[in-house]
Amino acid sequence: MEFSINHPILYVIAGVIIAAVLAQSFFFLFRAMKRAKELGMDGGIIKKTITSSAIFTIAPAVSILVGVVILSKQLGVALPWLRLSVVGSLSYETVASQTTIDQLNLPAGQALNNDSDYVTDLWVMTVGIAIGLLLVPLCAKRIQKGLKKMEKKDSRWGEIFNNAMFLGMISAFLGYVFCDVSTIFSGDTSGLIPVCVMAVSAILMLVCGLISQKCKIRWITDYALPISLIGGMAAAIPITGWLA
Amino acid sequence: MKKTNKQPMSYLDGTHYWGRVWGLSLFALILLFPIAICLIFNVLPQWNALFKGLLAILPMYWAVGIVEMFTYVPMLGAGGAYLSFVTGNISNLKLPCALDAMERANVKPSQEEGEIISTISIAVSSIVTTVIIILGVILIVPLTPLLEAPILTPAFDMILPALFGGLAVVFISKNAKLSIAPIILMLALFIFVPALNASTVGIMVPVGVVFTVAVARILYNRGKL
Image (cartoon, rainbow over the protein chains, first blue to last red):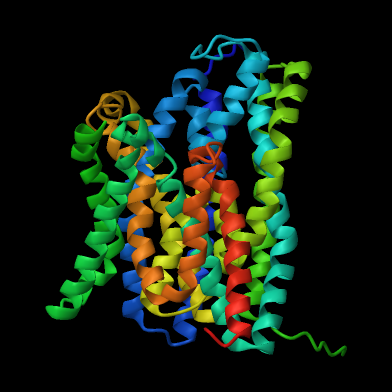
């Protein structure tokens, strides 16, 4: 069989794997909804969780789709479709793929039309990210057990521990937003773009909170994160035009 | 007749059981993709480039993968973790989505209700992402000029600042005292260490988490939290 980066068989295999991953999501979704019913959890909260999670996901999912388009020029559509639907992320896949392409001594941007080059790239991308896939099923129960034990011993500390973990993650991303601000000392204001976008997003979140409290429009809090996300992304367009 | 004293599995134990079954099965299925391509096209990888490529990325990616597991599993809950580590895009999509859902439902990942909310939000997010990408792949020819339009590029480039601006307001406003030290540390590191940028932010998440937990413990022991 003659190889091509967009050979139909690649779509069939990728499609089977993606269907299996989709089945896993549906399985856990229905199981959690059934348990929520058994526990007598408020159906309204479950419904809101579903709708707001779905709405929140749209913008990041479209940006992942942009990643598929970017990678498809070198790798065809099937492989990026699989890698960005399952396990991967654009930054990981780009680095793993580019590292292999460098080792293959291929010019940047050239499509991997040779079958041997393609499978070399595919193996590096697959093995590189396999560790999380393998370890989580093996270790997650032990990690959860340790946490439960800690919370049983001191519930107040357990709550603070959770909050500290969330804040640690958020602070790392806030730091990242400022990583290029020092460029302003050389007259380049583009490093301020992420800072301004973050500020717009934060202001929108505050406004949603205020509207919810002052005007008693409670539903707005359910969609505050998607509103601040999409508002921030939209603001990035004029802000980039202004500062770049 | 032999009596069996088998207790029915709790929801959490069931989650771990099914998480393992699905996780390990999908791990095998994902590994089958390169194996199947090699068999179907009767081709082998170029071993020299393969080993050099793996040598270049494995030390960092596997170290990050191990640390991410210890960092993200407690935040995502069991069901959320099993789903997220298979579907990917954790820090830029699944975790913020679950955090927001749990915050609004006023539950914690360590509670059963939190476990349920986190699982539902991540499952929905995974399904929506998969469907959008499937539609995008089907319509890739007409969509490519739109997705690559120069006017939209800044919006897609700025997704992380737009995401974490809103999320930061929610969590910092509720934990102001605890937020000060990690934010100062991360700002100083990212501003003054040139090697820290978009591609290294994933490595800094565990650093931020460990530092914040340590600060929280000190403040807690001193009765300041």
